Picture 1 (cartoon, rainbow, N blue to C red):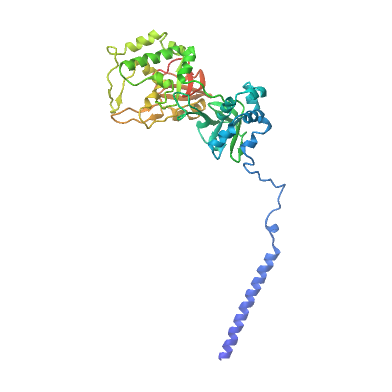
Picture 2: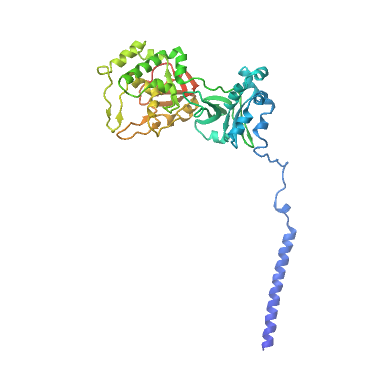
Length: 414
């Protein structure tokens, strides 16, 4: 009986093994009859070669035929030493084309004769440490302030130990690279480099030379504005109040604010009822009490409010209010709005908080203006005013301590 059981078990095992071997044979047959060619479609057309995002450094790009003037200026400059001294891993270059140089009056002869320091200044103002790709800029609404390689120890009381750094305000508008509010070239014309990014630009960038105050003093259109500022400052001085508009416009670093000024012309004053400096003086004098400002006091929100002159109550929203943010910390220090900022980001900039208030101390400081877009032209009005928005007569005047836009029709009145 035992022997019969063993024979039966051996037959079962043998049959099972046979089935396993048969299944494995079928699988092997199927595998051998299929191939990658059988399960994938035939390729159509030719393979597209892979192009890496960068194949050369920006130092090689500037040797291209469209940058012969830039390359010539670079060879005569000390920029290689400056760049090596900065030691950044990446640079963003706003590389001026030959057209940009010739449109600005440069020739090869002028480049050959130019002082090395002049070429250093010109080129350094076009170069930014860091890697700013087009997708970084196109994601913005408005401008990104970028510090260039150009510095100066003689600007607005700066020193070699605390130099002034020149900035470029770079942004994107449909189809255009915008620098300081002005289109510089069509979009998507740049090239990524192994060590940065190169944007070709069709206009040579010119660094600012004057402060807001110097610019106003250089243009007779603003004589009434300057008179109003100095009349107010004298009242503050007589009242021992530390509000001085002229120092703010001069770019005194103690204020620490880079700002936007909507400068009213003489015509704007005259259209608002102020024909002469005497009219402004009378308007201020009539608001004083025995020749003095009212006493400072707490308002209903327990902010300590320092009264301002009657003319300053009209002028502060033009941009002078930003000087009030400078006492203490916690304020936005760069409030430069170019036209692309006003057009693309106007609602966010309207009434923007510059500095929060502190109970039993200074009140909050706001941008007291509203910005709107009229068929691609920025319009401005005083926040809360029922008067219609005004156009800007001139825009994007870049100065050392910000940017000036010109208001010509009227003051920005309540």
